[in-house]
Amino acid sequence: MIRLENVGLRYGMGPEVLRDVSFSIERGSFQFLTGPSGAGKTSLMRLMFLALKPTRGLMSLFEHDVATLSRSSLPTLRRRIGVVFQDFRLLEHLTTYENVALPLRVMGRDEADYRVDVLELLSWVGLGERAHVHPPVLSGGEKQRAAIARAVITQPELLLADEPTGNVDPTLARRLLRLFFELNRLGTAIIIATHDIGLMDQYDARRLVLNNGRMHIYD
Amino acid sequence: MASDPRDQAPPVAADADPAAAEAEIEDVQDVAATPHPRPNPIVPPTSLASRALFFVVAIMSFLACITVGAVAVIGDAASEWQTDIAQEVTIQVRPMNGEETRQALAELVALVRGMPGVSEARALSEDEIRDLLEPWLGAGAEFDELPVPRLVVVEIDRDNPPDIGEMRRLVQSAVPGASLDDHDRWQSRLRVMANTLVAGGLGILLLVLSATVLSVVFATRGAMASNRDVVEVLHLVGAKEAFIARQFERHFLRLGFKGGLAGGILALATFGVISWIVGQFAATPAGDQIDALFGPMSIGWPAILGILGTIILVALLTAITSRLAVFHFLKVFD
Ligand SMILES: Nc1ncnc2c1ncn2[C@@H]1O[C@H](COP(=O)(O)OP(=O)(O)OP(=O)(O)O)[C@@H](O)[C@H]1O
Ligand SMILES: [Mg+2]
Image (cartoon, rainbow over all chains, first blue to last red; front, side):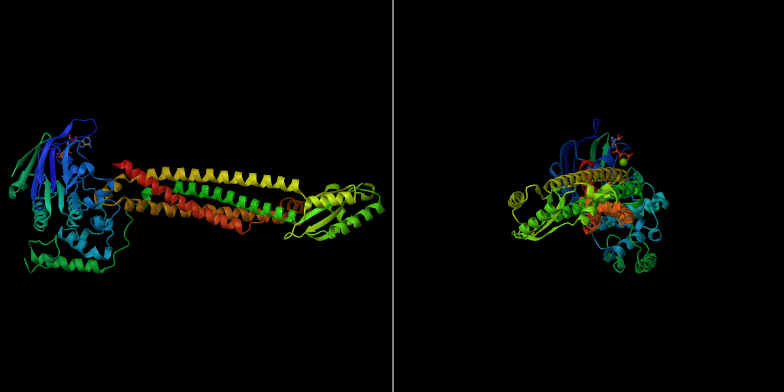
């Protein structure tokens, strides 16, 4: 569902942060994306959720060549992708509940139709009690769980999670990872960016390793 | 696992502790049953907090409404002048000695009455002439010693107007010192003046509305820029541009309407005060002069409708402008 061939990426006139990256992601697959800080994980994620376009190389997403995508087709593609941002990107003036429900609201769905689903998911990630508070009063880990809930609420075809366990204790990290596996079992392709070796060692999954802008793959 | 009710509700199908899960389910249904509070707007209204913009829109709307109202009053009065004047022509008879004048007047009245298109003709009496001249000459003036011309007022059947040129020729050949005045010069001057004022008013209106548009563009850009993160998140969760634009537009439509209304009401109040002041003069000779010169100055329906239209125009303009500004912002956003 995603193919990259010799993709390069640079910010402005800076150096290339991704160099000759080639890989593909299959439907329903599960993989970790890892590498040292500054290796370009977040940048690669940005390419995959269409916030950036490659400066060179070929990239296709859901069988669309991203170089020829029109701006108006972006929302439809993005609705098939769930993203957990490294910095959460929760909207501070909305409650936790409203933040998690945002992708559904944006699709024009009726609140009465999704209220139970959203509350159920919130209580599953342990935020049942925090549904109606605003993000500024949430702890780092709570924000992270809200961000994850928002990414998975639409059951996307592809989930991109950037350091989704960076702010939680190991037990909760395992629990959240199980959520991802569960989602994967239901058919979502998952890419988790992390440098938590301990977490990756617990699960036997494909690893994409970025180092200095280059990609090595361990199947 | 199969007995877990949440197997039917992915993606939250897995839980290690079924007992805890049961408790959570009840929890959820409790919360779900209580009515959810009204959802917060996606774009925080306080971040748009443009009280300044409200005042700008209100002031602009006030100026626009005043202009529209003034244009309507002038247009109204101008059309009144034209209809009044076209209804009537006057024949002026140069002063002669008493007997000759009377004869000439009688002759003229008879002549004109016989013409097609004339519904009535009447010579003004000396008293009426005196009344007409009094404001200029003062109450005590001795008319007998002044060579004052006499007038025949000819009322015209406007459905079947006479040939004024022909009438003028006949009048002049019947009574050599008589002249016919169809107020054409007056009329065309007044018309030019009124049209100039109306054109000037429309020009001012255009400037005021342009200034409104510009302030709204700047305010929208500011609001978008300070909500950059919100716009970004909306993009990333797959919001269409029309959806994002609607979030901003809604706010600006409300703001535009409120500002427009405030300015409009102030303008109406101003007109109310002006017509009250004019009303205070109505009974005095000066007031009669104003009336005679400009027609009755009244805030009629055209002015009120114009003002209401302006309020709506300002609100719509605000909304449309901010919508365009939002789309433009989104286009250059990436
Ligand atoms: N918006 C940007 N403009 C310019 N340079 C950037 C930008 N974002 C990232 N970079 C640079 O690109 C490189 C890769 O950054 P990136 O955020 O992708 O790394 P990362 O692997 O996610 O790191 P971390 O593990 O710390 O999150 C870094 O050198 C960074 O400075
Ligand atoms: Mg990163």
